[in-house]
Length: 298
Image 1: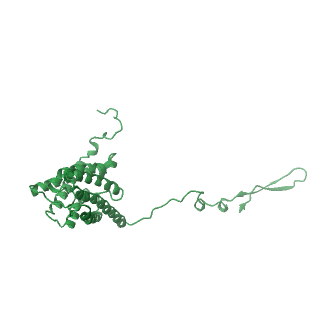
Image 2 (image 1 turned 60 degrees about the horizontal axis):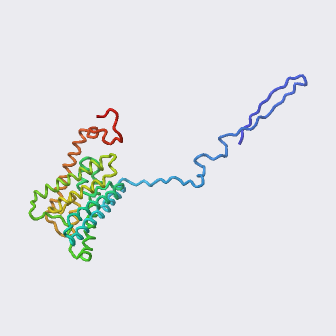
Image 3 (image 1 turned 120 degrees about the vertical axis):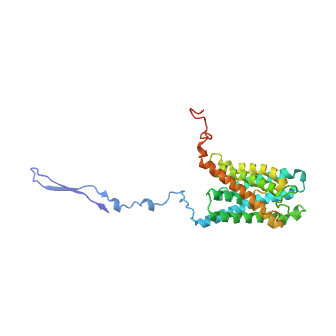
């Protein structure tokens, strides 16, 4: 256990020149020391071992994200559809109440799912993310399924409660209003959806100091868009919203328009975003987010 170092010396003095030897103090051998290694030491009292989350496959993670899209779409559209039914009892505030409900509900739903799936909640947004290469085709397909299921479930719940709660059949389906042509409705839905997707791309996808406010900015835009579009199309801007309400109500009037127009608007928005990225828009106004005016800046 210990190594011993021995030192000898010879005394050649006149009293006999006897030879003497002495043994030095024992020194410990680190290799055989009883002190435990760092890996074998017991954690200090009160210190908890670090938690390492389990690793899941990429497909499992994407399924969880799609479930987040389902939950977010369900709660967003449940509030919107319920607000439509409730507003039928107070038609004088119909436009404002639905618009506010849509915006606030979407803000909450996006914030709810932001860290899970990014809070897309709209097939038009998914298409734009595909076109700018921010999402894979498999994940996009799973998101779409989650959104369609969430919309249908929300419409079913409101339809189930509507006869007892409001005394009216489900009225949440999109349709082109009388006096509005298909071309007018198409252009309105396409332009408003393009604006919505641009907000998503530049505020949420493009990271900046304002990104944490993206759900609020998106919700405010949706309020404004609903105020404009409700009298003409009941304001879709979201094919999943149209699909669920049409499936439950059985009203498929001009259903193709509420897919083609928003998806066309999303494609336009994605093209504009890529054009700005091509010219490196980030450096065009480099001091926009500075906390103070830089020296020499004019």
